Length: 430
Ligand code: UGA
Image (spheres, rainbow, N blue to C red):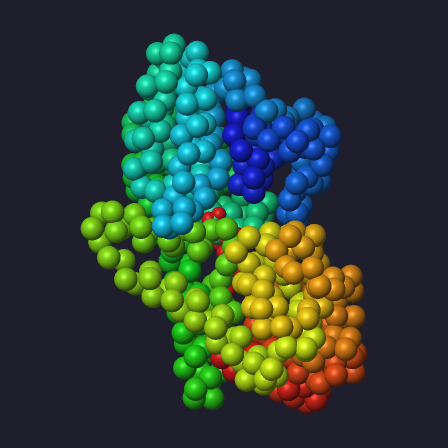
């Protein structure tokens, strides 16, 4: 099929590439001329495992191309996907100006029937607004169908999640676009659920909020574990064996971050408020998440005491493993708080060091090899759950640290083993 994706961020670029991979002809459009130029010359603006190879392969096969013209995309495709940012505003509500702009651009370029699909995460009832806007600005007065098709990919696993989705959600107003949408997704062999547009939009906000709730739940349980000597890993394992609960997203941490959960929670709370429902449950999820960071910082200061004049090593800057994304990263927040207390930092992240530089004070030492970070540090902190940190040379770290203290915000090591190795080791909920 001939498809256009507007927006080449995480969702747009990975979706467009995976659509090309299964045989569709895809044009990825972005209004950032520099980004389009970079993509046209073989560069990839984000780190995402497997993406670069897949882009190259599909560009070479003539199935994937890049453009900064919405009109070109609309003219050359049957279905136009909107995948532009929906950033938060200071009051927690969603800035819809990018979506609105794109809807007008598409309307202006339409000369025949098109299916317009919203993939961006949007408040419920956005589809209706997009349909109205297109109708208003479409001079040629041709028909279109607006579809809601939320995306559930995780950064760091985006290609994998897209190629093997748990489900495809298609929200429609009439049956007319359903067959074409099913054809787009047929190669992915995933269950498809067809709903009305409002329900599809809600599935996305309700899912992300539920996953955030699950993380806050286990983080709250971790507090009880610490107070009673129980082990949160064992509690999570035992809970997770119940299929109704499931083990995934029960990993205690120094809090969740990223460009989705914090923003989507605030948006969902705000949407509820506008509908005159106080979503107190989700406010508590936010509160637990903020407390988790406070508790972790306190754990550090309780042990190390005064941070002024101390050097702290930090492993991990990205908001999670397998990505270079530092937006709303708990690891960055932690670094900033340590810097505010007067600590000097030595940091390492396998992919996110470049992007972190813009967010941290300039006196940070960026260390290329994770095994060198501990050198001369008063304590070492694990802030992101990168798999490779599990292979840290612990003997060497202990020798390099001026005091063998480790704070593990991701529970990567076994407390008993760490004690045996001579560490003062503090993790979450154990
Ligand atoms: C999240 C959702 O998982 C995706 O399904 C959704 O498509 C995406 O948002 C989106 O709306 O675009 P993402 O933000 O990329 O994906 O990353 P997650 O893997 O969900 O992790 C979010 C945060 O929660 C990270 O900071 C991670 O470290 C933390 N986390 C995750 C925990 O603290 N514990 C866990 O058990 C799992």
